[in-house]
Length: 173
Image (cartoon, rainbow, N blue to C red; front, side, top):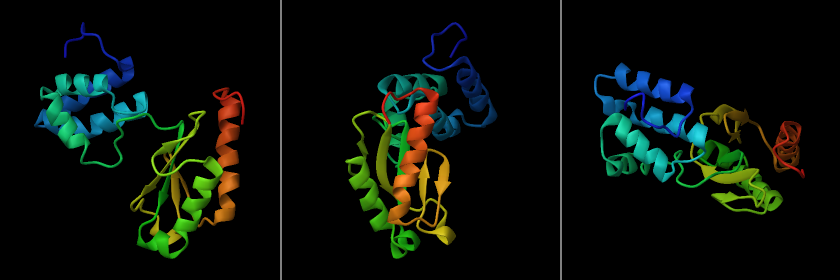
């Protein structure tokens, strides 16, 4: 992609993409990292994201979609500002993850892959997040919370509502 071409990404991310495709022997190898970085910046893999990533790598949009649909951590619709991922894999499940997940559903009023009406939270049940020794565990964006109980849920949600309020990104919390 030439420097004169318009991009939907920030200049910093566009430069990172340019470096990534040069780093790998095969440009296509940069695809998954690019999709993850794009999702972090844009919030999800929109049609425009898919089109630009395909152009930057030199593959078809269908090739990008085929790879992206394989990975459950990649989204095709917007998530909340704070994406709550509750691990329900075996270690977490045996230590009460479903009770924790149910409490999040009750308190947020949404189910799996749901987004709260204010756009502040989304919720999803996920496979292992690599915190088996501290089960049950969740990940909120890139923050881990472990050794949880259903009673922990209110405090965690209050913490993120407070962050959003402090940032001025939500008018009611």
